[in-house]
Image (cartoon, rainbow, N blue to C red; front, side, top):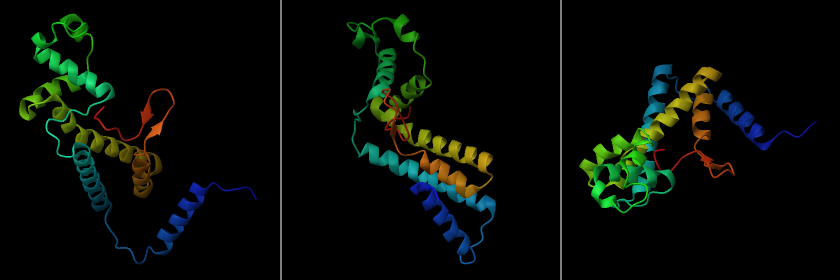
Length: 174
C-alpha cells in the first residue's frame, strides 16, 4: 500500500464521521442550508473587516495596490494637493489607470472623511462575494453543499506564490 496524504485521510475520516452520525443531525432543506451558509459568510466577512479596522479613524494602514488606488482617488478629488507629484500632477497619467474601486472610494470618502476607511468599507463586500463565488463554483462542480462549503473555506488561507503575489484572504478589497 502506498502512503495516503494526511489531508485525504482527514477528509475521509470526516466524511465517515458525518455519514455515521447522519441520523443524529437535524434534516435541513437545501435552501435552509444555503441560507445558513450565506449568513455565515456575511458574519465572517463583517467580523474579518472589523478585525482589520480595529476602530482606527482615519484608517491609514493601506498597503500594496490599495494605497495606490486610494491615492488615485485622492488626486482626482484634490488635484491641487498633488501639483508637485510626478504621477498625480498630470490628469492624463491618472486617467490611464482604471479600477472600479476609484469611483467607489471617491463616493465613500465623502461619507467617511478619509480614503483609507472608504477603501476598508469595500472589504466585507469583497470577502462575501469571494466566498459566495467559490461556494457557487463548488456546488456546480461537486453537486454537494458540504464540498462546496469546504472549497470556499479552503480558499481563505493566504498562499504566497513567490511571484510577489498571493492568493487567499487579502487585507484589502482588491
